[in-house]
Image (cartoon, rainbow, N blue to C red; front, side):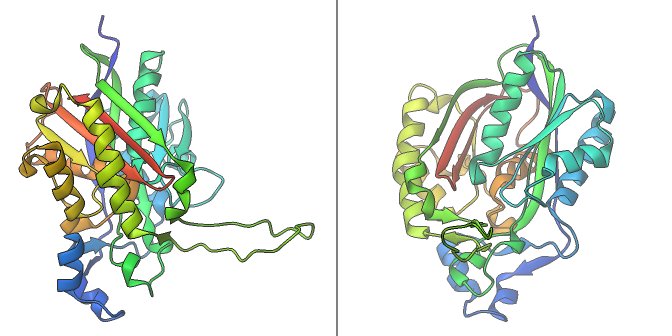
Length: 323
């Protein structure tokens, strides 16, 4: 029986405005050399008149158009984001309304840079339990939450969205192995959009802070120590069979260290952060769509790919996917 989930299409959408490191050097104390040497990032896309739901809607429209799928055929829409338009309605519900997916339920999943991995895991289980077709999208407009006076964070992030169409009909499990994890005790290492109780009955009014804050060293150590350890355990018997690794695009030095620790050739770790920066929940699907477009990966090929996200929460998640 062909009841497993399968990815049948990928798509992506990024804003038109390209902001280079030299552009940033005009508004803050930084330089191209400083940013590239520490992160590998050379430029990023920045939204000027679009919000997260706009980017995600464009991805949804592409996925439908490229596969001849009607919006009414969708059973679900999942959007992974840490920069939604609103707390309510969800970005996914806005997308559902924009494309007319009248039969789909829709919700956002908040797991920061692990969000797409979490959402794809959720979609796989929805297909196994009765759903037939749905969209999984990672989308961010992080330019609206970063502190543009803080060069330690502002230079890292960009805007964009990407996603996949997931359908019933796979002959083998889409997800061969998975691990999803979190550690809320270290949540303060990356925060965004703090909202305090501002009612007249609140015991104490603490100033709100919408801007993103990050302990860069703490996150680096968390990934290269804890995340690598968990990946090594999960894939102990599978590393030699993996065709490519699609990791969250946070920092090229992180990928260098992860590759060394896992004893995997660095060239198997695909990378595009130099052109898009860190787009949080969108980085992995952006990388996936790019790899499919340039024929590095082929849907339905049976290639084994590792998707791994890590970041705010703290959260991390790894999937061994059979394309």
